Figure 1 (cartoon, rainbow, N blue to C red):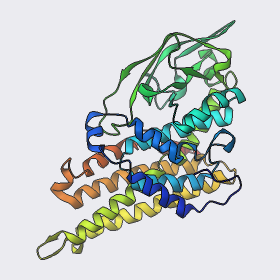
Figure 2 (cartoon, one colour; figure 1 turned 90 degrees about the vertical axis):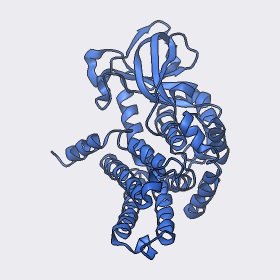
Figure 3 (cartoon, rainbow, N blue to C red; figure 1 turned 180 degrees about the vertical axis):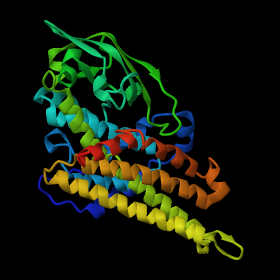
Length: 382
């Protein structure tokens, strides 16, 4: 998973290898989902395979792959691994922790954090959301007051993915509310820092193996060396992270959609009612056809985003379009899969109900579907 710099990657082989590896991560999933347990062993296994380093520079231990190749690998992982929570936590770190460090971090910050994030010995979190600011991210109230030795942070962050298990977090705060978006600044705050704690862990409908919680900053003092980027540069860091995250976080979902479709097709061929396979009935066949269309359309939209980013073009609107469509498509296809299986699809044993629960989260994280529609409308000049 660490090809020499400049080597052309066979995306088909990469995807196939990730798919086969992903299948090794499914043991005990039903129990982990029921108990809401973070799969630490699977996390380290992913690092050993190379997942966390896919897009990271080789000098820090990564593979340095193009976004198109990364998406191929993540689609394969999603097709093989049914632990959507694990994959979501991986994506959350890869795009909103590792990416900001690789792009905006100092050499010392990159040396301190990136190797550990890539080899699985460190876990990172991205702390922007607050009780009073979610979609309106830049109305945050967490304060950073500068003194001679660094900054003192005060505030609360909510719904933070990986918070309960993270070794550090990229925390966004404002140095002056009067500056508006221009006051937002990012900091690297490590577990164990005085005044920094996980204050609460959330129990969720789905994605239960991905831990989520609140972070409390109460007089938390950080040195100047912990600031990520310049004062007032937090908005640029956040926007860059979100563009990459929206572009990439749903690649694994196309793999999950493919897995659901293959399973449903096999079932529709083998399950017989009224003397024939249920796939012969238009109500079932139509659902399967729609699942196939959604899958291929999703792949096409994500591929377009990857091509733009790999050619160093902006992809803000394209990423929003992909995020909106793929998330809604995953939900629709998961519901269709449940319908194909009927009563069995409603049972916990079948596993389809877990896919439905997990898919619903995709319409919320990295910007809700309504926010994506708003972004698209603005790019249309409305």
